[in-house]
Length: 149
Ligand code: FES
Image 1 (tube, rainbow, N blue to C red):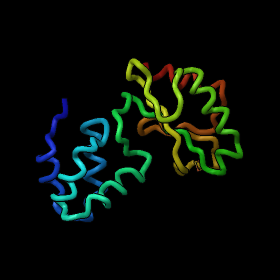
Image 2 (cartoon, protein in one colour):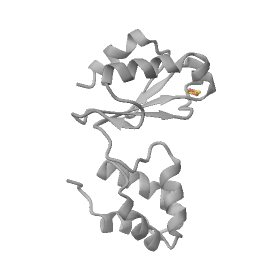
Image 3 (cartoon, helix red, strand yellow):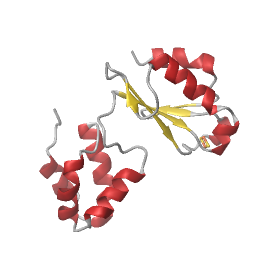
Image 4 (cartoon, rainbow, N blue to C red):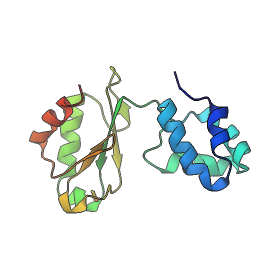
């Protein structure tokens, strides 16, 4: 159960420039960005529904679906791609039994692909929640995942 209601969250963010911060907090509180919140957010900030929807669907850290307790974001941008990030994605798919955009049945992990996470010089890279993992190899993946049981 969310520890803050939508009206409480809306009361904390009154200006248009706060849209992204508001969406991020809703994501943190609810585990995703419920689509039915979009019109109320738009009304509260005085923004078009299309703009709120556009921002809410643009960023990979915002999701319209409930996320697992641990969200894995594998970088798919060019430097990581050149360092075989596909092997990392394939290993994660095999280990977790899910593909990008999916969540394990036990709700432990969600797997996503994302753009650069700022660790290009140590590619391939991924994040799990707020922790960044770099210089990845398929062999490192089981141990990393084991830390999130
Ligand atoms: S391209 Fe992957 S971290 Fe920057």
